[in-house]
Image (cartoon, rainbow, N blue to C red; front, side, top):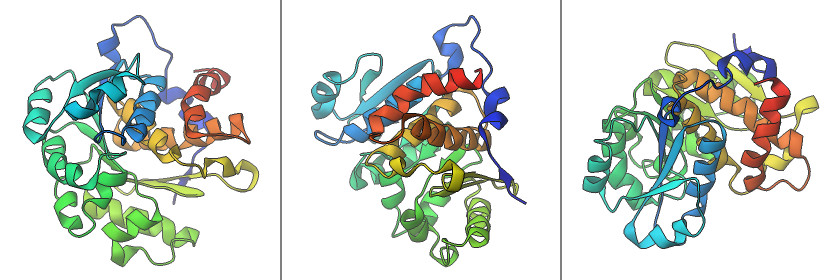
Length: 282
């Protein structure tokens, strides 16, 4: 049976911050693509920082450093030219979670994902990191661990799990498909949609609806999924287990959209989060 998620169910997961060093709340690394492709990673990074990661770094090619530096302040930057550079960066054990995919580019994703997931960190695999493996999903799934969160929308899910993707518009089939995918991947699966389903390899399933009395049609805007990936990454960086991080992020994503309302663009989601958390008593 799936557990419906609601705002009250996540309050105890996000205890109020006490006195601690920033590294006590984790350091998230968001990998970015080349020049002109950094917007999605910046959205994810801002989401990770707003949700409470102590530090967030965007790792981008050298040619994209100036562009990202002009758009980021609290978020830090690191040059990640290639897989070897990423491996050197990941020697820093203080990097606690990785955000992989938004705006990364397919070729860059194929080059970096084996190193990123091979490092054993908690990680979110989204967007280009999913699409880059559409032709060989087994190669990606072999790299996953229970600390990995896959965040496909329906189309990406169908490319990774074509035999499970029939009738995703039906709630019962959607829940069953996400649960089967999580078992196959050995990872948490967050299947995005008006009924978002979060499933883990042990058989836990949770849902977060954005329809009916909790509809949030404003989430149908470019970049909203990138912010969700950042929310999950930030919670992983803080130390939440993968299932709890994904489920909590899914609820907060909808609550931010509902709190802002019409006119929402992706940037508004992270900026609305502090008020949503205060309203929840976090």
